[in-house]
Length: 197
Image 1 (cartoon, rainbow, N blue to C red):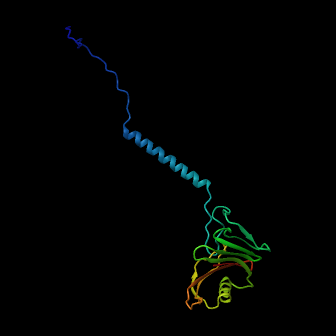
Image 2 (image 1 turned 30 degrees about the vertical axis):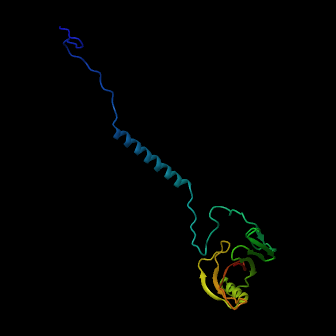
Image 3 (image 1 turned 45 degrees about the vertical axis):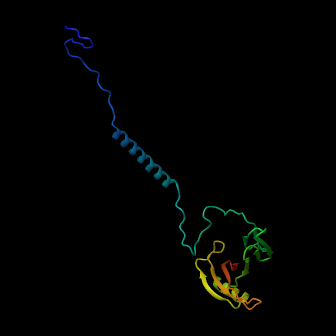
């Protein structure tokens, strides 16, 4: 046997240590993707089993209730003297001057060009929302021309009828300016709920 520095010169067979098993990147990535897909599918299926579908409404006429819960009330609420209806109205302050009556509320906008909004009720007397709106406009402003009907009008989650009419009042100097009137009416339990501006 000869000796060489750094080399073994002994004859014979030597066993080498076996390599530890390794997993390829492709195998690990595939396992993770499959696990995520199975977990996500299970969670989606579980949520589908425990949740109820949202009710489907054909609106109008069956428009249901507010989407989630009672509406958030940030404005004051007016209730009629007989308790037949209630309505939220703009808070009185710098922008609005509010006056209350037995059958409703009137809010006068005192900023910009101004304007008046009335929220009130009247007995329907067997009339439809459209008849009440037209009668109200003709009685209050007889010289108006209807511009258009408001589609899918809702007053208090109740289907109704709405229209926009134009009025040209004469000024002191014989000049006329167009004034737009909007009326929305809904009838419930033979009581007409009216919003006008």
